[in-house]
Length: 469
Image (tube, rainbow, N blue to C red; front, side, top):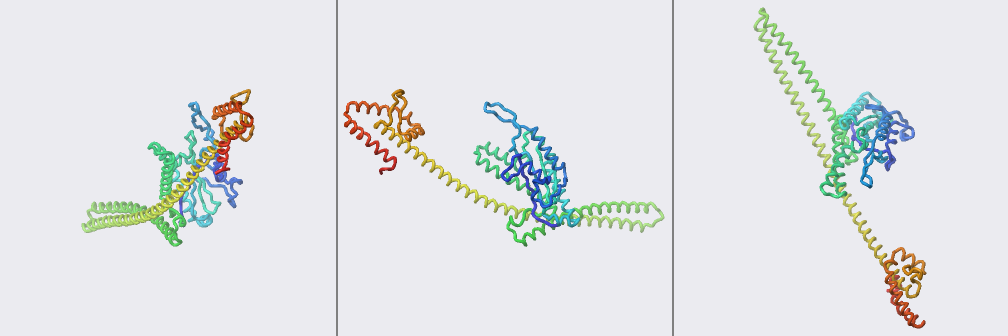
């Protein structure tokens, strides 16, 4: 047996393609080895169904399920209505596991094929325990570098067709987020707590998968690169995994042998007792022979008791050694997880700093935009007042509430800022005052007065435009 890293990958898909182009159609067609979806395989061969229905039947079951499903939605007026299943709803749950022995080596010997078949059977048993009757199909592929299997799980009894709810890690995430919101946390904190629960449940699933599938098959929990193991350390760990699997098999075989030995011993004692009884019943046999038989029976019973005690002690020692090895392995895993958590925390702090800097820049940009808008409004007001003095801005004789602005640019700027309604009363007062004053002045006096009145307004306009300090 060859050992290597072992884990199971669980993922959901919708009929709409995800960011890498995967969808329900793409996943099932690739599994069925449809030509358009199997270009990555040099010599595609049909998959082997080892549990449930073929992959083509999975597609039919999925489509019928979606066609009959519905989701209740709340309309704007408060009423509820039934809607069909959206294309972006995740409606298929898959599990993928790869056997870490090349396909060429598996097919090279009956022993390797038997080991791979045992691995497949343990996978099916684990999947059935996890998903029950929602598990509709398990298939295997042997036409790629490593043998692997695909499992398909459908939410057949759920009218909303939510495959994500079948994922134990996703369910834990939703429950954690709901509890966080109920405790008064905002959505950001709730999402963080949900993701933490999701990762913890994911590790729990992988640990359970390793205990039920990987370890009995002599496979390791993770590979050497993830934990930065040297080649020698990785070889040592693989050898340990092989020894642990052998210990488990030997223990099972020895337990079977012990049971058989106890059954045989009981049968032997029963036969011997019958013989002694027959000898006692025969008056013509000597008392010495009977006593010898009794002594032999006692010796056999004592020997059987000693053998049973020795076997029990050996099994207990093996169990203790196994427990110590597992505890050491768990300690190593916890240390690696703590290191991963520390790195993740550093990355999160770095991202938080980046977000704070971005928010500060956004606030600065918003303040600059407000200041520029205020300066533009002030310039337009001053230019409108100046236009009232020189006649470029005046009320429409036919509609006194409407103002005529000769300068197209000034008119568009005033309209964009919606300033006329705000200052039209002030403009009316300025226009009426200037009209009354002009009627009492000669043309030359009007020009001088206009220049005198307009001078501070022009100076303010120039300052707004940056022409003067």
